[in-house]
Length: 190
Image (tube, rainbow, N blue to C red; front, side, top):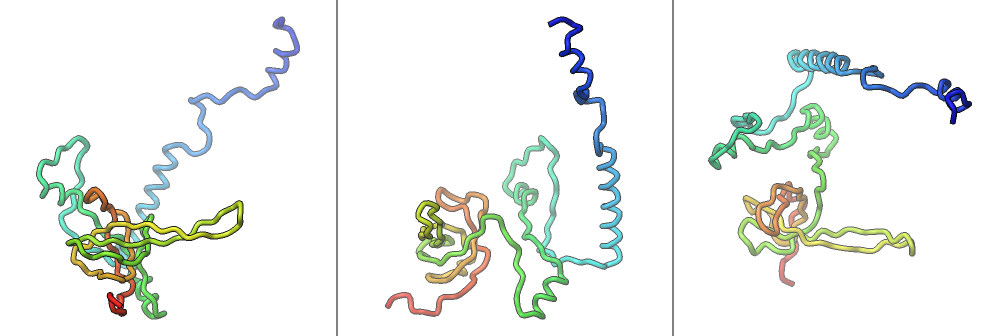
């Protein structure tokens, strides 16, 4: 094609491509300013006592600098201590007045019943769930057994438990007990 052809004329009508030095929309400065405003608002809310939280037991929490090596198990437990999620106190009180209890939600939490309590500090829960078959339009039942850690051995055979993922503790066990939702009242052996 020649330089004077219709193609070069059409290119002039097209909007030029965006280049990195052009700023579109919000830039980093705007986000920093918005973050500073939110920080000031949050400080004023908490300093005036408008909002308080039910907090988990606290210990010495520290943040490690990047590249810092932690040699001992004690130091690791201090630095990497897990803190239970908290719920605002006002919500807890209003829920109690209405006759129910709030609990935090955990990603991938499961509800099942204990089918084995023979091991020390380890239980096995049977998790039942339903899947949908799109071709036949029906639901079918599936189940999985999950080993979970029960530090104080609160759950017994037949109890309905709420479990959630945790750091891997053994070859089969990477869930932990959150709550025993319903105790088993029926006899174990019939």
